Length: 161
Image (tube, rainbow, N blue to C red; front, side):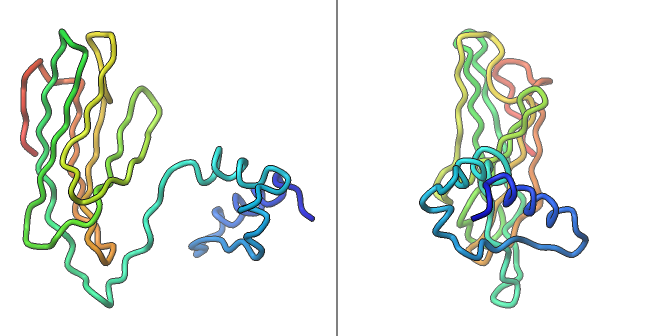
């Protein structure tokens, strides 16, 4: 019988508590059926970005190696293409690709077989300003983050990090 705003406020308060590691919706039926706009309120705000399941280090605690990044910018076409490759022996299950455009960060979780992402616009400046790529194995162990600032790249430059 609680309003969506009340549940959202409870989750926000829980997130501020030291040691709190998550929330449980006691009756998920309200969220599934979007009763009172609950699902909409959660997906537009608190749960608007994808998240990973916590790691299971008791099953395996070896993370994948730090990915190598390369980028190609086609200024004339207004296109930026980011590519990445795994390193090390641990198999990659997921890629976490975080990008910043202006002050807005966005997170994408991509399958392990994906090795690139492109951005295209009608302007000479396309794509994100910053990119962070993390490899995640099947047990949720995350690699060190590979970072790239695309603002400093000349067209066609392909840095490896």
